[in-house]
Amino acid sequence: MIVNALTIDVEDYFQVAALAAHFPREQWDSVPCRVEDNVDRILALLAAREVHATFFILGWIAERYPQVVRRIAAGGHEIASHGYGHERASAMTPDALLADLVHAKALLEDISARSVRGYRAPSFSIGSGNLWAHELIAQAGYRYSSSVYPVRHDHYGIPDAPRFPYSPVKDLSEIPLTTVRACGRNWPAGGGGYFRFLPYALSRWQIARFNRIEGQAAIFYFHPWEIDPEQPRVKDASAKSRFRHYVNLDRTENRLIRLLGDFRWGRMDEVFRDQIS
Ligand SMILES: [Zn+2]
Image (tube, rainbow, N blue to C red; front, side, top):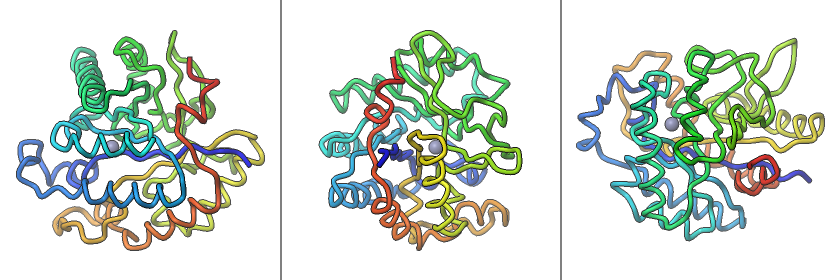
């Protein structure tokens, strides 16, 4: 049975792109954080099943909750970077992006005493307009990136990007999120909102199909706030944003438990050891 890669993007509910307009950056310090409890629940779920995963942690969270980073590392999980402030890579100048990449890596390494090799851009924000970002990710000292979603989506994605690990620049691998081919296009099969709003059986079928047909490991991702139905609700967000953020939050934990039982899971740096230079 193929070991797939389980990844968690560690950020809080008020940092996601869909709600960005409702939580300006300068208010983040005054919003009640829920990430610590949610990460603890995830760590307990994984420990009970002896699963190790990769946590792409936001520098902003690491700075305020260093104990969360240390607990993740102590659980045997991979510490990786989700950048510092959750700004889309595509919205930053090269200098600002490089500073964000370096700052987040140094923070996570200081706190965890582990070397950080992996990076995931906020909102999969490496697209055809900013492929130069890969050069900067390598320059900042990362060895792999998991930042390109080879799908068509209104906020991210490169529909015709490679579907399997490749090396965009020297000393860096890009390990794209999992897609399945059907009807002449790529369909997202790597978790996120789709995992919440479509039936669990579809996710299971997609991952099994990907493993069988491609003979490769899939990558699945979710966020701590996705197992937290009690989080404060933003009532004046658009209907689309509210749907994307809140649909089936109360079902996600049970779905994750099924997912953990239906497949074998591991850390990015171990699952893709041969593809990371
Ligand atoms: Zn994110």
